[in-house]
Structure formats: C-alpha cells, structure tokens
Amino acid sequence: MASYIVRSAMNISRRGLFTSAVRSAIPEEFPETMSVLTGLEKKEIEANIAGKDDRFEVQTLKRGDNSREAPIAIRSVYKSRVIGCICTDESTAIQWMWLKRGAPQQCACGHYFQLTDAKSAAGQ
Image (cartoon, rainbow, N blue to C red; front, side, top):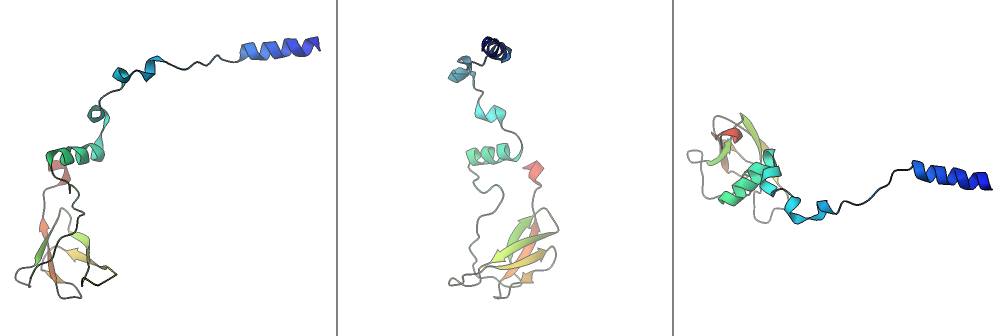
C-alpha cells in the first residue's frame, strides 16, 4: 500500500503543471483584424469597405431587351465562362451554358450574351 502511494505521488510530480494564461485575455493584446487578414478574404473586405459589394461578380444581372447586335455583356479575364440564365420569371431551373470569347451566343430562350474583357483580379 505504501509503495502504491509513493508511485502515485511520483506520477503526479512527473506531470506538467498547466495554468491558464490570464494575460492573453486582455483585449489590448489582440491584433487589429485587417492586419491579420491575407489573400482573397482581405481583398473582399477591402472591396466591401470601398463600397463594391460584388467583388467576384456573382450577383444576378437583370436582362433587358437585347439582340445579336446588342448582347448582354459578361465580363471575364478568361477565354470562357459558365453562365446561368433563368429563361422565364416562372422558371424553376437555371439554363447553364459555356460562354466563349468572340461572337455573341444565344441561350435557348433567345437572349444573347457576349464575353468581354475585364481587368485581372490582381490589378483591381
């Protein structure tokens, strides 16, 4: 029994002593959010602060009257882009299509789209 108590005391003394760091809970120790952010997240927040909410251009565009001579312009830095067209207001499905640079392309519903040049993401 005595050896068990001695072994238990020795095991407890070998364990590390863990305490909570009170100093890290002080608000002044945390860095400012913008100084910590990097990459796309930082660019997105900077664009929101500047007032440009659609940095990655994912919001929907309202279609107006268009024709082959006056298509809906879709900006892209690439040679092709996937777009979705909700052909009618009552439609429950999106008509997806690859839009390639060059001549305007027609959706199944009759609307014309054309891919145009845009500034690169690094230059914005």
